[in-house]
Image (cartoon, rainbow, N blue to C red; front, side, top):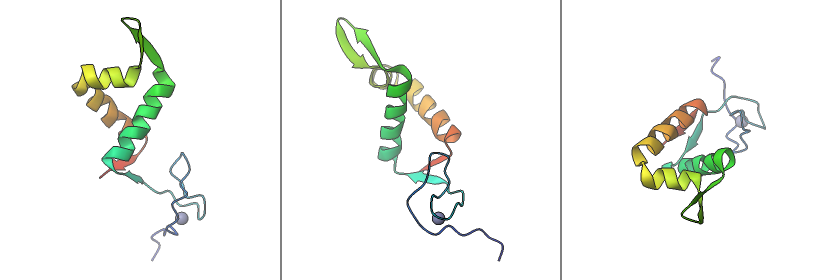
Length: 86
Ligand SMILES: [Zn+2]
């Protein structure tokens, strides 16, 4: 069997490689976890914006104002990050 076998560790680096055995592992996140990571990514990329004198997270504003655009961006991001959402 030439099939690579991942040791089963949860220590996966940002590139999707296991930190213990070095195998490439697809990151499988729950919808909730993937979304929270995506929100962190949006936060880092876009920070906060000011709306009517209030400071809000740009990602939250996108999610609330245009959920379709948010979902599309989310799907593109999970593809780019090789994240499997289950
Ligand atoms: Zn491993």
